[in-house]
Length: 174
Image 1 (tube, rainbow, N blue to C red):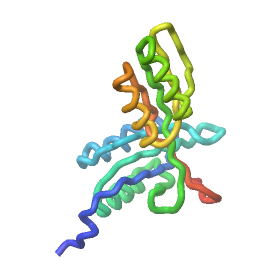
Image 2 (image 1 turned 180 degrees about the vertical axis):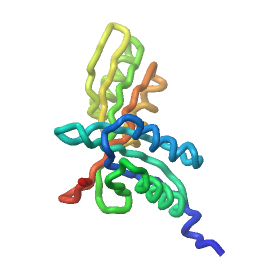
Image 3 (image 1 turned 90 degrees about the vertical axis):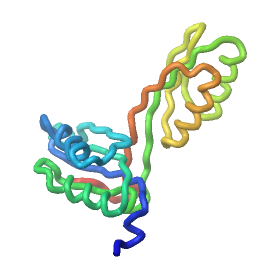
């Protein structure tokens, strides 16, 4: 009989340190798509001075067994140096960046600016008919701001996806 705790879904923020070479991201994405796993967020960028290593941050969800399978399969990919489930390995910081375009006039513009100030969103572009706000924070914070902008005149959203790092002295290194 399966363990009931194995059936509980959880979100996982997984950091993967890989060689910065052509095809690595395609292999990581292929691992997910080939097995029917969903990617909620994906970011990747070089992280060392020589440009040899990249860090991939993947946010996914599944049962504990599925998350363990994902981590094990990622760890077996040839250019992967290290896999860390930041969700389980202790305190960590997760942030996203979003650019949010709001179109409106009159009181809608004033309300958009008031809410932006409350959420610490910065105006990075303004015309007589629109604003583009830049905002960083948790996904939940961005979602809340975006939802408040909908009735005011939300026109477009561009988001980076989650980036995450362990708090304290723990680090993802080779």
